[in-house]
Length: 167
Image (tube, rainbow, N blue to C red; front, side):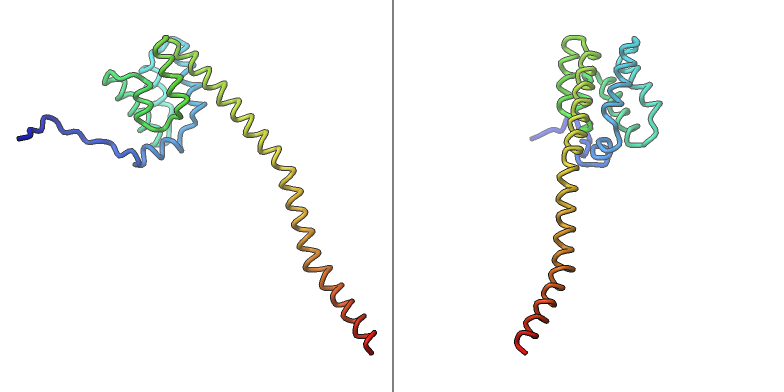
C-alpha cells in the first residue's frame, strides 16, 4: 500500500569527493579568495564560479561544482558547504552566522584570523618540542654508546683483573 513518489541518488558521504576534497583544498587560501571576491562586489555564486575556473585538481573542481549546485537549488552557502564535508565546523558556524547578519566578509575574516593564530600556535608547539626531542635523542645515543662501547670494555678489563688476582 506504499507508493513511491520520488527517488533520489544519495551521495556517498565517505566517497572520494568528501575525503579528497578535504585533503586537496587549502581552506584558509580558499576563504581568503572568496572573501576578496565577495568584498569586491561579486555575489557568492559569481565568486564561486570564478574560484571554480581557477582550480586545477579534480577534487577541488567537484567541490566547487557541489557548492554552486547547492546555491542554484536555493540552499544557503553554509548548508552547501556542510554537505560537501570538506569544511571545518568552525567555518560553517561562522558562515551561517554571517548569512544571518549579512556579514559574510566579517565571518571569513574572523575564520582567517583564527586559522592564522592556530597556525602560529602549532608552529610554536613544534619549535618548543624540538629542544626536548633533541636532548632526549642525544641522551639515547649516549646511553647506547655507553652500553655498546664502554661497558663491554670495562667488563673485559675487570675480567682480566680478576683472572690476574686468582693466579
